[in-house]
Image 1: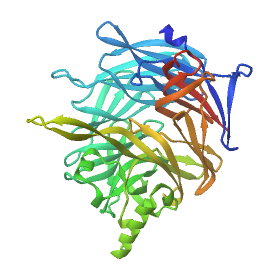
Image 2: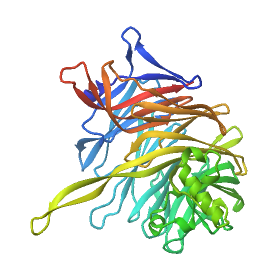
Image 3: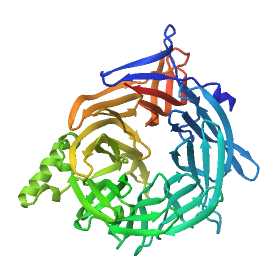
Image 4: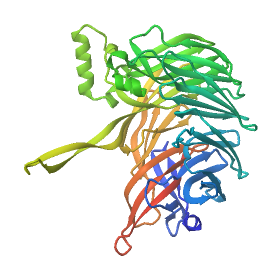
Length: 524
């Protein structure tokens, strides 16, 4: 372990976003040497993860190859304060088959959910909930079993209670309520005609109420979405069918934001029913025709709004002109309105965020990128012939789309930002938002550069620009970057991290290294 810790060096980057300039902060101005964390790794498949712990600091953890008794594997946890000073390092033995599934931060406690697949004959999936109090270096571990074929969909820890939404292939989903001090598990089954799945979950701060959006399968191709209320002790309190007045639309991705204890603003994406394939329905489609909002009061849906991406004022920025003209011509030819057609996007949706008196929804558009590879083979008679096949490269992110709503879910404005040169092997969010009064900074990390754009509602204050993250040495050159992320830390500070392959031109033979890196970024 010490050979890794000895190589830790910190990097600070001061990013003056509102002025449209970027400036690096150095540990020693005379040496012109930036502060930076670098951990040597063998490949970008290693399990390093970073979780911000508000202003207390940040946690880096990973699975080692070290084993202990009873078939346990050591996971190492390293905690840094907000000045990147290492506070402690601890090893925690977890089950050999455990993989990290999700995390949740609340008050002064960080909770981590680990799950195994239960591959042994007759064995059930197992889980472990590891609670960490970062500033104390305290760990508390809970263990248990899950229903057969269950996978974690959503996870919250409120006080002494863990709430885990479990999707079960071909069956009804279950809400697990785990009393952490006693280890007592209760399961609430979300009934449905064929299959039910979690789409969104929110637990009130006191843990007394669980608000859910649940997908219920009607047929092979069609699902209904319900808003469901369950008490913190597992009592079913009621449900309401969502968007009953619009059967031509299907909801896709959903989120919940509580405006008050009795009112929830639901948001996400929808897709036109006619454009969804069987496969997309079976997989829980991420295709999106546009954004939706629904205001729920108690168990009553008061207001539902659908906005087709074609009708966004910023549509020209994230949809091709050819697609827009083609769909509008099709609508005019058949004497139909444009919202009855769509140019559907793969879309990742962030949780809605409140800023001032507005509610902000952010989505990221992407597509699956492939390339063809050809080879020569020979038939039975030895005659050569050419053949080709498609190889999946990853998820190519293209645009961030952001919209502002009032408390009733009415659209106030929309805007967008182009995402360049961002190819990921996982479909997880890449863009973050920074709020500065009524201005919003949209930012992402790709290829060693931070791309950012400043907007004020539907207006662009500053067009997309880029600033580089400096490497450790002046002669270091970035060769490749992968699995990079930019996440909010505290105030206007953010963490950039990922894997980088770096070549140093001043070293004999142009020595290269592969590292896991971590940068601290400030927006002012």
